[in-house]
Image (cartoon, rainbow, N blue to C red; front, side, top):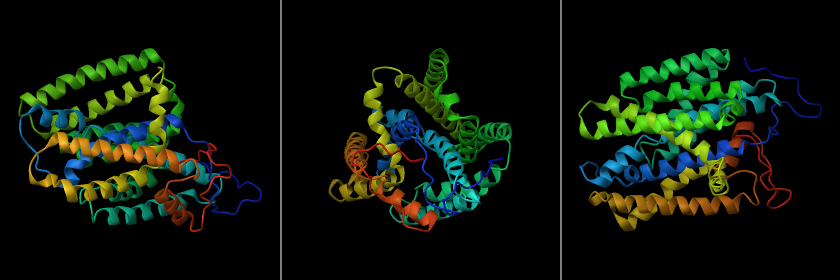
Length: 339
C-alpha cells in the first residue's frame, strides 16, 4: 500500500508543489518510445494503405509496428507510481489527485481522437482508473505477479490493447520495488538480456514474415522486440553514446505535448504530401523523422525556460485545480519535477 505521510508544515492539502527529482533515464526511455511511435503512427494518421511483401513493408512490421508501444505502456505504469508517491507528499488523499489526473487525461484523449481515431491516451486513462488505482492497494509482489499473468494472457487475445493492463502493472511493480533496481542492473545481466532478447526477436520476426501463425505471433514478436530495445538502450546509456541519447530526455518529459503535437504536424504535412493515396513507406518514415526532429528541437528550447511542456502544464493545473508556476526561476536551470 502506498503510504500517505503527514503533510509538510506550511504546505496546503492538495497543493501543486509535488516536485521531486526526475529520473533522466526514464525520460530517455520514454523519448525513445515516442520516437518509434511517431514513425509507426505516421502511417495510421495519414491513412496510408498498408500491406505488401517488400523490404520496406516488412521492416515496418518487424521493427516499428507494435514494437514501441509496450515500452510506452510499461513506463506509463511506472510513472503512475512516481506521481502517486509525489502526490502523497503534499496531499491527504493522493489517489483522489491521481483519479483527477487520469480523468482529465480522458478529455485530452477524446479531443485527440478527433484527429487520430486510433490514439491511445483515452484508453490509457480508462484502464489506469480501472486497473492501476485499485492496484495501488496491493503489495508490490502481487503487482508483479498479476502483471506477468495479465501480459501472458494477453497473447491469447493477440496482444495490442490487451497488453496494456499487464504492462501497466509491471511498470507500477518496478516503481514500487524501486526504479533503481532496473536501471542499476549489472551490465553483464543487461548484456545477457539484450543478447537473448535480440536473438529471440530475430527468430520470431522471421517466423512472422515467413509463416501464417496468426496475430498472436506478431504480438509476441512485438513484445520480445520491445524488451530487446529496452535492454539495448539501457546498455547504450552506459557507453559514450549516453551523451547523445540524453537528448531524448526533453521529449520524454513532454510526452503528452509531443504525442498530440506529432499528430497535428503529420496531419498538416499530409495536406501537401497526400500519403493516403498509395503505399509509400519511405515517404512516411521520412515525414515521421522530420516531425520527431522538430519536436526534439522544440522540447530542448522550451524546457530551457519552462518547468513543463505546454500540455503537461495544462494537465497539471487541471489536476491540482489551480495555476501552477511554469517559468523557471533561472533560465536553463535543471528543475526536473516528477512525472
